[in-house]
Length: 269
Ligand SMILES: [Zn+2]
Image (cartoon, rainbow, N blue to C red; front, top):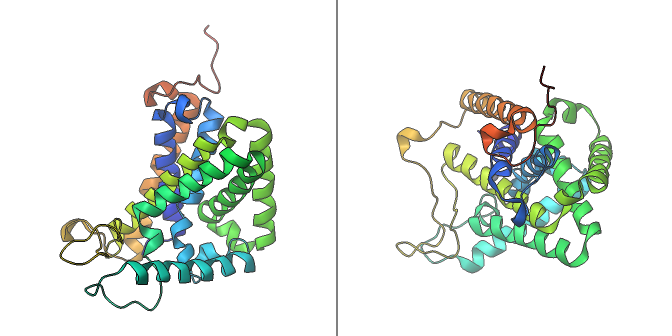
C-alpha cells in the first residue's frame, strides 16, 4: 500500500520538475528558493485526497481539527458519489477514494485556492501555506511527526508559512499556490492509480457503459502489488529523484531548463 511518505515524496519530485518548466508569467517560481517552496506545497497537497479517510495519518496532522475535517470530507465525498452515481455503480458505505480522487477535485482545489487568494490576498495565502506545509512535514518527516505532538507540527508549519509570506511573497501568489495544489493532488492520484485497484479519475461526470464511477488503472502486469516492499521501493525511487531535482534546482538549474541562477555560484579562478 502506498503510504503518506511515498505520496509526499512523489509530490515533491513532481513539484520540483514542474517548478522548472512553469513560466513565471503564469505563476511559476522565478528563484531556486521559490521552486523549493512550490515543491513543499506540492508535497503537502499530495496527501490532500486522503482527507476522505479519518483513519489515514494525514487526519492526525492538526489533531482533532483535522480528524473532524476528515469526517466531514468523507461524508461529503460519499454524498457526491450518491448524487452522481448511476444504477450500475456499486453501493458504497464510505466515501474513501471517490470524489477527492478525481481530476475534477485536483482542478477545483487549485481553482478554489487561486480564487480565494486572488480575492482576499495575504490571509488566505498564509492559511493555505500553513495547511500544505503542515501536511508536507507530516508526509516527508514521518519519524519526527509520529514522535512529536501535533502541536509541534502546527508550530513548525505556522513558522514556515510566515517565513514564506515574508521572504517569498511571489510563492504566496494566487496562481503559484493554486497550481502547486493541483499538481500535488495529481501526484496523489497517479500514485494511487499505480498501486491500488485504480482511482476514479474522471468519476461522476464521464460515463462508460452506464457506469459513472469507474477506476482507472494501468494494465495488470504494470500494477504494483499493494504491499510494503513495493511501497518502500517506490519511496526510495522518489527520494533519489527528489534529492537529485533539489540539487539541480539549487546548484545546476540549467540542466532542468529553469530560468533562475544557481543559488551558489563558484567564482571563476
Ligand atoms: Zn488516496
